Length: 380
Image (cartoon, rainbow, N blue to C red; front, side, top):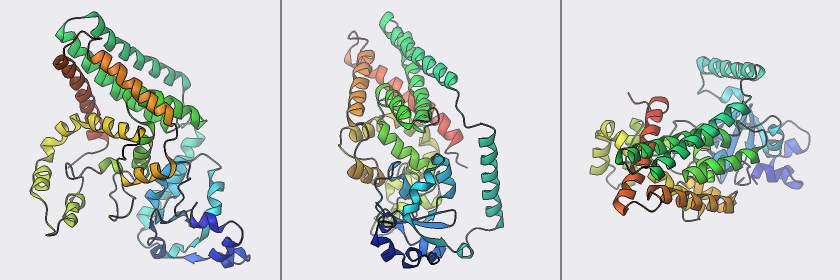
């Protein structure tokens, strides 16, 4: 529990904030003071001009993603991630009020944008635009399983190389489409009860894709919390893990130069220079291998062999897997059916089986890259 949460219990509240405990006006903090508390061990966040101390709050239901906004304003991202009524949970972390006049980094244009965004979101909620169609998701689930069954049947019933290549490409598309389904279920867009979304996410994630549900949630919650933003310091965890791709790819000049601090001479290594210089041409080839990387990270997460980031390592150390047996079982069964299909149900040679697996896996990476390149990672 964070310092603010601990302080709300008994006499600790008085020790942390005597004025508030005695019924006096709460403490006042400047934005400059809030910005000093940016690490998981010392994390302050702002919600609607109120300051909360969530340091070391590893019991946060959403995991370590809360630390992506340490030292920052979480008003809008809190609304996006949480159901109505969740505000009550953070009251125990309250330590004081933000002095609005101290927020000098937002001009009138930014403030007007934030107001417009909040007004638009309120209107969309009133219009019912965030209510999911269960019939649509039932159709999508059945359609995806139809793709999978067709790809498997093409291998089982045919001895044609062309048909097998077509099957591998269809399997790659199936995996790409599974990603969007798992995305919606694990972001709790389909069911109000979050456990239902998690369990369906284990099916589409662990079993059908080989991706650890918890690995994905940690990574992707961080992405949505701070999309396309870099870590502010080497010690903080307030950046988007989806663009933590150095030294292979850089998304800004700042990131391209970020590895200089790791070298004694303060200069880029020859490898970094080469990769950044040619990244416009290596982007798609690198993304061909993305699924292999994610399979590796998922396996390590599910079986406790490592973590993809400092934020994920911290979450695993403090909380562990939410569904440890289901995740291990799902990924084990995933590899069982993938090996069965890739081997032609025992008919193919080892090289031929590897060809099928690599075509399906790399085509999935390409299909994902086409979406990411257009919708997420556009480069000028």
